[in-house]
Image 1 (spheres, rainbow, N blue to C red):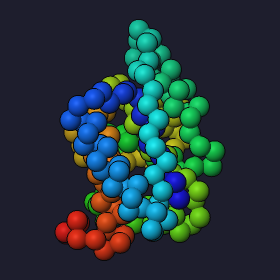
Image 2 (image 1 turned 45 degrees about the vertical axis):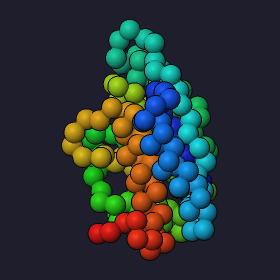
Image 3 (image 1 turned 45 degrees about the horizontal axis):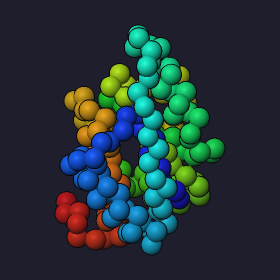
Length: 160
């Protein structure tokens, strides 16, 4: 199963990009042995509309236009379900085992994701009740994707 990340906002050169890249490189190397391929990150500029609702709609259109056909769409949203790492790994393994060709994780901009996009996702997950900047969400997602692979392979990186 191919795993993609679609995000509003660009990670500039610096420690955030380096950390996200480190985990995504690890995912790229370790994932294929268990049927999880990293398909890359698609970054989109923040909307330019002057009001929040219009900006979110604009961003949703950008994201929706890039999502792979038939993919399981998972939104990172503060109103989503929190999961522990083992459950997250299990979710990925289940989708892979069901024969899903792709899973796309969607990260909104500073205003979050538009309801039109959220209404069409398969799952909404949250990294806790706090609000996180999209750059940090990307790092957290990258790390959890790599951690999921280590859980599924029995690698000692994940110690429960």
